[in-house]
Every structure is written in structure tokens, then in C-alpha cells.
Image: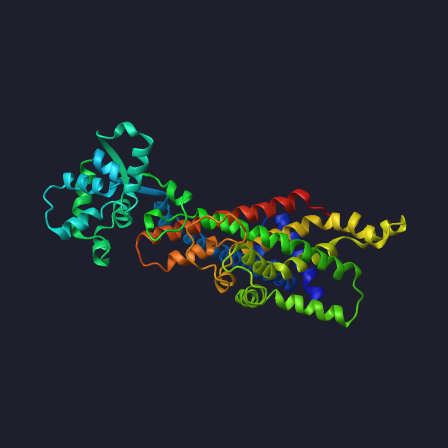
Length: 439
């Protein structure tokens, strides 16, 4: 019966084509059951594609909004506000090293109407506590300035800097961050062109500090790289060797199955468990120095070791068996087959898995908190056993600080961390595409 209707439909369509009647063609095709089934299948495919595009669009929208929020909050941290002060390099004050008194005299000269002691303390809080050290460096570098008067740019306090950069007058007063006196003085200095914005080199050159205007990420960046070096040095050879043995040499028995199941389970274990493992083994059992890149790298190595093993095994498994058979037929031993042929062809996939594992370790925080790397560290570590911190931990520390100046520092540190993460992932993509072998 269906064949009869199809034949009649085909005859009607042919007649309509000869008469060039599109309405008859459309009507005849819709009466065909096969055509209706194909039409429904294509409609489902179109709906599926539209759903996929909508999901991608929403994910891209959320990612863009997140990046925009972080960039909008952290871009101001790369600039600092400075105040121009008329400084008199008094010979006696320079000899005594009382540069703070020189700063106070300059501020009193700018605002002579301030007489109350409480107002004076508020006035002296306009500039950073690092301002006297700025004058000290200038006086030591240029001794001829002693006894003269110069206009010197000194860094402003963090709250004043945020107020000047972001124009948060009403919000800052309601939050109790900037007083009305500070707001009036900053406005007067800005109108007199005695305030400016300059690139904040201290954010890139300094370590952590209790003062927001002096805090930087250099110590955290160096600590992160030292930790990652230890992590790679421990996890890469051990993970690759384990994968080679399990994939190429281990006999198929219940012991191998047990090891594989445990490796797959370890890849899904929460990262804080590895922190507890590092705390109990490296610190309590072996007595290694707390909060050091050595302990942090070894702990992160335990974290990414299952990932490296799984990625290496998948890369080795993707190499065709014909290459192994051909090498063995030419007289190569099993070890030569693996290291002269199989491992070479699997190396791009292995390196991609290792780099992605390192990227995960670079952004981890919970394991490092358990081994004490959450401590306040201002000095740059020179050895792998010196106290250090990492960028994710630095972000955690600054985020828990209520001072307004650390809000922009936190967002800026996240931007630096994301930049390193993007570079690491781009490196993995480059290696995969550069050395990829298609069978």
C-alpha cells in the first residue's frame, strides 16, 4: 500500500514539475510517509544544533562576564596614585634620617589650616608609609639635593589611591573607607594638578605586605615556579615510567587490574586529601621544612601523578600495533620497541597530558593550605627549602583582607594567574598540533 502511494506521489510530482506548479509539488511530497519521516528527522537535528549553539553562547557569555568583572576590578591595581609634595631636604633631618618629619612638614605646608592633632594624623595618612623610604633613596642617590627644595612625587595611601582612581566618593564614605577630610584634600590636590597616576611597578617587583599600596606578586610568582619545577621533576618521570610498565610490560592479572582501578580512583579524589597526605608524610614523617616549595611541589606531584599516568597510557594505546609488530619483526627487543618506536610516536600526547596536569597543579590552593604555605611571606625564596607562597594562595590571602586596596590587588593577581594558565594551555595546544601524528 505504501509503495502504491509513493508511486502515485512520484507520478504527481513529475506532472507538477512539467507544469511548473510548486503548490502541487509541496502537497504531493507532504502526502508521502517517507518524506514526512525525513522531515521530522531533519527538524530534530535542527533543534539539536540550535540547542548546542545556545549552550555555547551562554557558556561564552558567562565566561566573558567573568573575565570582564575581573579585569574591571583589577586593572586599577596596575596603576598607583602619587602626590607631589614640596620637600625641603633639611640637612639636620637628613643626617638624623628623619624623612617622615620631612613628609609631615610638606603636608602641613600644603594645608596650613590643619591644626587639630586628630586632623593632622588624618592628613599624614594621605601618603603611603613607604613615602619616607622614597625620600631616603632620593637623598642617598643625589647628595647635592641636601639643603635644597624640590617637588617630589610620593605614593599615596591605598584608600586614597583607590578613591582617586575609581571616583568612589559616596560608596567609600558609606563604607567608612575614606573620610570626608581625605575626600576634600584629594579633590583639592587633584584640582591643583598635584596628583597623578603612574604604572605600579611595585605590584610586579614587591612581595607581600601588610600595606596594600606596597603589596606585590613577585614573591608569589617565583614561589609558584619553584613549586612547579619540583612537581614536574618528581611526577613526570615517575608517571611516565608507571604508564609504560602498565601498558607495555605488566602481565594481565588481578594485580594489574587492582592498580588500574586505584589509579583511576585517585584521579577523582578531592585535592585537599592530597594535602592531608603531604602533611602526614612529608612534614610529620620526614620532617621537611614547612611552607617550602620542596614540600609544595612534592604534594602537587602526588595530585597530578594519576592524571599523567592515565594520559600517558592513552597516548601509548593510540599508537598502532603494526608499529610494534614491525619493529619486533626486524629483531628489536621489547625494550627497544617501546623506547625507540612506541614512546616516540606517543610523545606528543604524553607532553600534552603532562602540561595540562601541570596547569591544574599551578592553580591548586587546597593542598598547599594543608602544608602551611598560607603563611605571610614577604621575602623572595632563594632555595627550595625557604618559606614561600604561590599565586593561588596569595589570591586567597588578599581576598580575606577587608581593606579596600586589597580588593583590586586580588583581582589583579587573578589576572596574572589566568595569564599564566592561558600560556600553559596554549603551550599544550601548540605541542599537540606541532607534533601530532595522524594514522
